[in-house]
Length: 478
Image (cartoon, rainbow, N blue to C red; front, side, top):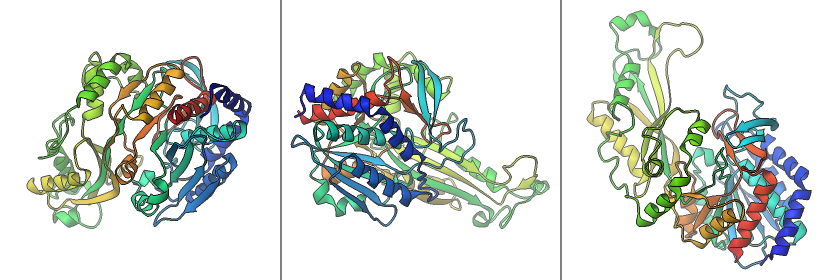
């Protein structure tokens, strides 16, 4: 096991290699890898494999799948424990409007957060999740070049289809189950600090189903059937756009917050005793004002003063969300038309013990029952199931001890509002998992995605993040 003295040797190496580590981070970020557009995927997979070798992995493979490749790596550790580090090298597209800095130039900018002034690095993937991946690789190299090995053995799995719903990850894990099963637990590197410096640890993730609805005159048999027509014809021609709007209206309460689809909430598990205890302990540390500022919102659905209720809402709410809706003329200026079709994308977040595969059929049944049999429904990606881990798991306790060594006790959330394919490793391999770390990043899937590079007394910068990762591995080795 790595001793305190050895930890200090690693920390010294991290500090000494700061410029090199930032260079590696920027190189990874600046390599395009948009899976939705098929841009730069092969090049990024090859780069990740190259970085694995650079930091000291003894075995590296770019494994082909039916889709984008998985980059696999192995590194021996000081103890008999092995962690599987999971991350994605693909990103969301970066060509949307609203960027104040070039999305692929990895520029360092001065930023004022609630926690104070920091230097942040702006780039697509800085938060989700090339930034955390590069930090872990830097930490691994520091271990190998100072002590000789990391505290635990590492199996690294980087996929290139997470933003597509990880359609080929289950098949990859099934095919390579023998070697992946050498891991004792799964670790998802993650910047867990809020913009005010608060510490967060999530014990699980929600599942997600993603689909598309389309209403067209051709399928409906009313309205324009092949192309948009002049809007003057609305006087005597039906509108597919209004039909979809009315169909969507039947799915929720007027405020959009209560789903009215029969059976939607069936199976939702109430908070367990452990969950109640975790929330009661963490709620006093939750800063609602900071969360609102980070999201640029003015208020939550419920009052801010009931922090426990807010945490439960975020954790246990199963949601139906409209991600986008379009049809007809959406460019500048006027073009008076009656569109022949309209489309919307939707996602459903599922929680324990809902079944992800049951949700789309419920929507289909609802549409049919309300007379909207003609509205077409298409699955966009395979989505994920929910996944949970007990706070008592050794790997989670190791994460908590690392937090305490680097700033204090974290707020523990039973479930994140987001989705990550942990269920593949949990259910197929039986691995407990943890996701966490210090450092701050934000605006994943949005313009100006960023991560803090140089922090302050409240928010960790890159060197402290890397030291935290080494400490976490050392705690798990014990």
